[in-house]
Amino acid sequence: MNDPGLPVERVVCDVLVVGSGAAGLTAALTAAAQGLSVTVIEKSALWGGTTALSEGMVWVPGSRQADEAGVRDTVDDALAYVERAAGPLFEPARARAFLEAAPRMLAFVEAVGGPRFTLATSSMDYHPDWPGASRGARSLIPGVFDARRLGGRFSTLRRPLASTMVFGGMTIPSGELSIMRRAHRSPAAAWHAAGLLARHALDRAAGHARGTRIANGNGLAAALASAGWARG
Image (cartoon, rainbow, N blue to C red):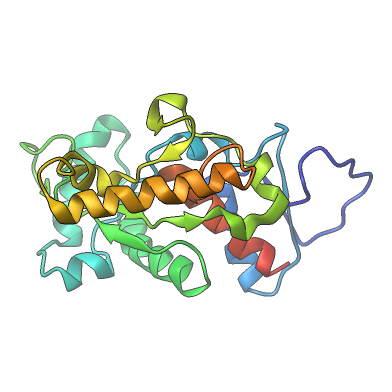
């Protein structure tokens, strides 16, 4: 992906990816890891797509993280849930292919330098009363990303929604919201919050338009793009 705004007269590549959200960047990273030449094109002046605005959670039943947490889940249970959610559009073979490939996709993204994910054990499926629903075994949160690794490209990453930031540009990751809420009654949480505020103050003093400790969908897009750029 060239820096947005730069004119490209002619591009020759093995794989052309349209769109710079998580889906496009994962496809690009996958192709690059196979030794193919890849170009990502984006119609906007900013990259990251709607992913950059989102919470960034991914829904992957049977992940390594779930196994390590000792959470029991099966493809058949997840398939039953997908069947109920899809209704008349349900395609058994297609759904099973997704459920079997998704954990491998997640492991691959982590292995090739993309974001690392944490199991959101408190996040249950949207319809916990449906057949095959799970409580805390399928949703994962992307890790925090240091946007200073992007260099000048950080300024062209789409900003998160203003309502998801505090102090004019400080991001609080989904997994840290509970810590921040305890800051007034827990010394450990207060120390953690103080560290985040200090980091944000240093970022602004250094001239950054917003904090460089980014997370959620913004960090997910940044980590995927960074891994892709590292592979050319």
